Length: 361
Ligand code: DP6
Image 1 (cartoon, rainbow, N blue to C red):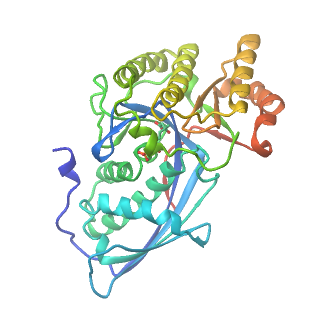
Image 2 (tube, protein in one colour):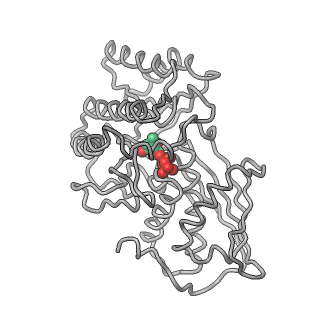
Image 3 (cartoon, rainbow, N blue to C red):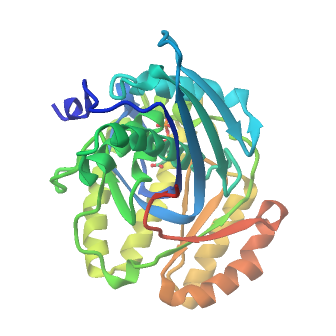
């Protein structure tokens, strides 16, 4: 039922050609999505902060084909250069979404995309990339369906982005997004992300995220492979239940402003994610020695100063250092003086919670 609302069989007008540009952010999960069923349905709900600085900008140009044929027609440019190795991922995406966007085979598309951060470095480039592309497609559909509501636009963009990459459905809006059905969050859905609907304490407004680029190389194991290893995983059931409980506890911490409670959930989630990787078959380790150095230094500094610095990890070696805006000066000083040395070429990105994607043209 929920899915069928995104099917459309008639457009009130058709376009000859056009162009849209969207800028869409990455996001960082506090409670992680790790494990999925068929059709990009998550095994457990997840919740994330939308980021501000880490973004993908995508321009989608389209013109009507002389004759509709049975294939997708598109070219792909990454940083101005043709990128053949991204094409299969886009082809899969188009195949999954064609049912919901029946105009896709009528056009030739040119996709031009660039990131503000290194591709495949554990910063979710698939989240920002797939959400930007989904939004471009929605802009085309919107032109052909002028009475579409803003609410439907956002929901369907998130729905489509999910079919490109699960976490991408959390990159459309800000600042806290929930994806996946949770019994305390009435509107939550496995099909798309929604804005976190409850009260959030001042402590979490404008939360800071400095991303330490420990290893900017390509990931050894893709997220998709990792998700699949949760099938038949000895701890999967426990893990999926735990994610639900962690969301319940996070709701309380976010409301009361409990920074210690928040940090505990966030760090435990990061380590559990990596524990799942280390206990799957085949097992693998994505953390690097410097990841652990940074974690230990964060814990030591927190103990010594009582400041609310915490970390989380994605499926990679990079460390997201999260802290409240009110403590930003002291913590950022510490990061620069003591943590940046553990990054590849001293590289890091100073980011914070953001408001979501933007239409540029
Ligand atoms: C560890 O969304 O990249 O970042 O759906 O296969 O594209 P696919 O996976 P993806 O998985 C991200 C997993 C994570 C945790 C999270 O963001 O929730």
